[in-house]
Image (cartoon, rainbow, N blue to C red; front, top):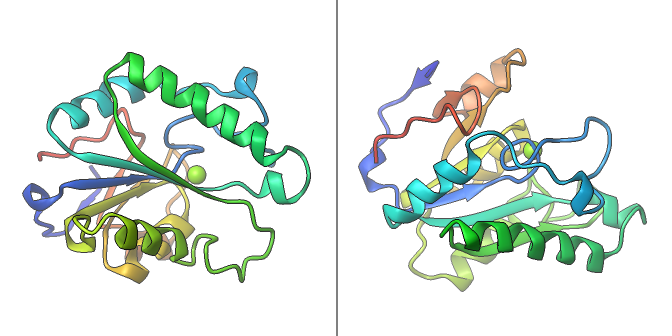
Length: 184
Ligand SMILES: [Mg+2]
């Protein structure tokens, strides 16, 4: 762990997860278009399973501009997510909900770093409180979206250099989900 603020980790009940680069391998400069391109990162199943067993509620929050660009349909994206959820279910991992944003415009309120998708979760799941939530992502936009609504934030650096902005916005920093050690 490269950084730890005094955050009350024992109070964290909800984990928001970015998808690409956190759960599955990202395609630099591209989009995961189908099942064949979807590759889970090392240790993701074990980690999510352990959190599920501890009763943490898991949500996925992902920008998917590939749909807005016409590279894939919303149906393709939904099918990919069904594939992912089936793998998770086989491993006793429960995902409460997946929020995705297909908008092209960075001004779209749902597109991270804007907080629209997070606010939808707080609205639809009234027991989910920002102060009991940790947002884990591999982009500055994930951290900014979390900070905008008052969640705690965890950055996965995947061995890339950390910018000052990332250091300022991340409460926790680890290399990858596999390396994440959160003492809940
Ligand atoms: Mg990402």
